[in-house]
Length: 355
Ligand code: 13P
Ligand code: SF4
Image (cartoon, rainbow, N blue to C red; front, side, top):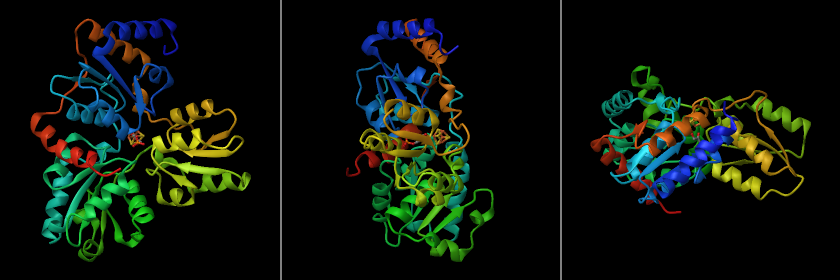
């Protein structure tokens, strides 16, 4: 069991034996039992940069989900090996955009006569082959910390540019409307299961943002009804949400931003203030524990962890670390050379963005 003190001791001992040879990264949505062993914690943008900043570490143990471990493999040296303690830690959003579907959409946009205006932008939460697609088609990767800058960059790349935004429609819509000032009508949704994405030629021609029909199963649960109800009960309540939430939720919130932003806001909050937070529950609970002087509630009536983030637990971490002590690399995440080279183009474009 996770709370087993002998597992805590074994993780500590294995980390000590490995010393500087291992670097453990922990995403903010990881369980407490795992996060205590992370050398660094962060949102996906910070972790991508942190992974690249430790070329001396032989092993990168990524406590997060598959697409993050892939990005770490792409951004680290060939000699470094990236380990994901449980291979079942995927991401349902990333799985909503398969390369074959995106290539079919690209062909359809080409047939519709607009492909030469389209710049693909993919959220970090996508597979390496989708990032590679963006790399070879003049596009870029973004995270929830830099989506605005990445979109501005993309719109500057071509005359009459349109952005194909993958795979999270909500981050794409929220950023385009609230930060870049596009109208909701200029954002259309591409349904990969319908011919031409289910769009008419007129809709494609009029769009500035073509949003892939993907979403996060965790953030998609937050609703405007619960938000309104909480506000009605507590007029002093401040609501802060992640941009993967639906537009109706984000527009009702007081603040919106990546996990790193949410953490900063709560750290700096005035004592005694009241907050409802719309992001993953492991993080919300940790924030509530860190600021007992605030009233912090979760923006949903139900418990809502990211089930795949939660796959990484202490038994899996101990197994991965002890295997490394024994010289065995388990659950290595290795992106093939061609995909890596093309994906790196899109990731490097992101890392070169200002700010
Ligand atoms: P950030 O880490 O960019 O805040 O994204 C949240 C998320 O859903 C990660 O899977
Ligand atoms: Fe994917 Fe959402 Fe879980 Fe993040 S929180 S890993 S986007 S399912």
